[in-house]
Amino acid sequence: MEKVKKKLSENILDKISMDFLRNQVLKNAYGNDDTVIAKLDPRILLVWYLFFAIVPWFVNDVVFLAGCFILVAATTILARVAGLVLVLFGLGVFSQTGYMFIVSLFFGGNWETIVPLLIMTLKVATVSLASVTVFSGLDPDRLSNGLMWYGCPERLSFSISYAYRMLPMLMEEFQNVLLSYRLRGNAPDSTTFGGKVKYLIYQIKVIVHAFYPLMLNTAKRSRTTVEALEIKGYRYAAVNKEVKKMKLSSLKVGYNDMMFAAISFLCVAVTIFTTTII
Amino acid sequence: MERKQAATQSQKLMVFVLTMSLYGLATLFTELIPKFQVGIVEFSVEYFLFIPLVLAMLFDPMSAALGAATGELVFSEIMLGQFGGLGELEKFITVTVGVYIAGRLVRNPKNGKMVGIAAISGVVIQQLMGTVVDILKVQLAVEDFEAVPGLPESVFVTEGFACLNDIVFSGILFCLLPTLFLVPRLYGKIEPLLGMQPRTEKTALGALGIKAVAGSIIAFGVAIGAEMLAENGMQLIDWEADWAESGTAMAAGMIVAAILAVIIIAVMKKRADSTNTAADV
Image (cartoon, rainbow over the protein chains, first blue to last red):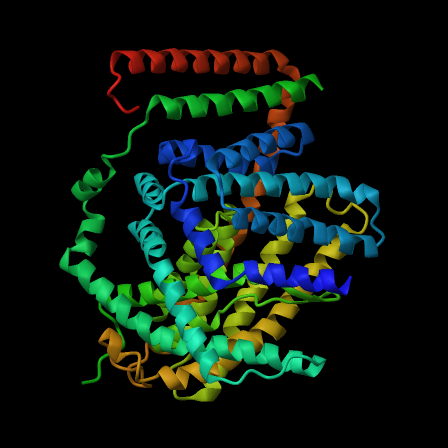
């Protein structure tokens, strides 16, 4: 038993290395631009998302919610979302409602408590799967273009594009700084319980210390970025209508987009129909 | 030369970009780091709020606050596909207000006591607002909230406990101590990198005025308002449910319309494909 436990924890620790995280995030951002979802028009997808992000909160009918859930689950599969994101999604749903159920048992809750919580879980799951589909299924540039078309502040779409491009670099740099701190430091022995606590404190300390050089480096880099943007007249272009038009001219609604919207509509209609029959 | 610490537009953008990327990176990690659970006490590295706090104390507070909130939204919510709609608005506003107030409180970054007070009050403000909104959210999402046995108490206890836990654990370990460590170290070093002068008592933006406080309260009101929308929506859907009961035919009609739309689009697509094979639809 001890052996299995050890092996399991080693296995998990192996998986959660910095490189693994970076790969998963990158895969999530750039790895699946050949899926059906990624090729859709971002504007249609955003409207679709708005529907599935808002409507489930207001409906308490289990059949309707289950129908919506199945639909968004199907689109999530179509979008081929990275595994890590799905694990996080599972954890998130459990921590929001499962945890609450366990606590409510202490306060004299019973199996009746599970029904409203099940409804809430379905709501949370539907809403977050819809967002997983849209935000990790879409290419970052297309997503930011779509947001811009709806008049979101230029800052936001700039942030999205910038974040996706800079993140790999930032992560690598952070890792390098962290590793150099580890090389220089002497980690406390972590075999005893006291040692483990010390080790944890040591780790946290290293992470906080690592942010010091990182902050200085990033400050330099963000100055370079902004200066480069200024040379291209970014702040004027951001508010210029002509520029916006040129930028957004690549967006086109095709038959596939209409098909996607129609099929989603069909699914919702079928669930409403089922609801009314039952 | 004693100018007020009013940064130029591009310097503000620099601060924004800096805070966004750093805090975004940090929140990405916290999203991925597993939580330690000792009994009911959850030792989560809830957030690295010290990063925007430090930057808000050294640079323009508003840009740093907005940058932090945007960074969290973009890096950890949108990139990981965890975007939660209405709930994110609340987080965005609470982070902005908390960081902004903390940044405005510090007039002289060399004054360690003030830095500590500002850091911890930033956390407390952010956490308290988040807790209030969280409790309201559950109350609105669950029908007959009071009637479900054990639910109201458990919500208050879990939320209240999480709040206290975050303030004590994350607040001290991850906000207060790192801020006290980093602010004096970065002061005077990081500002020249962005082409600015360090903040001193004379160049600070002035004490926290009524305007800022009022603005924060209004922002908090908006955060609650976003949740209150849910209540109105509930009535809207009640009305719709009414209609749905009497309208099986309507639903059937919707299905027929949807099927027709699917068929028509399929036919159109096929035609477009055959007439223009080169076209990339």
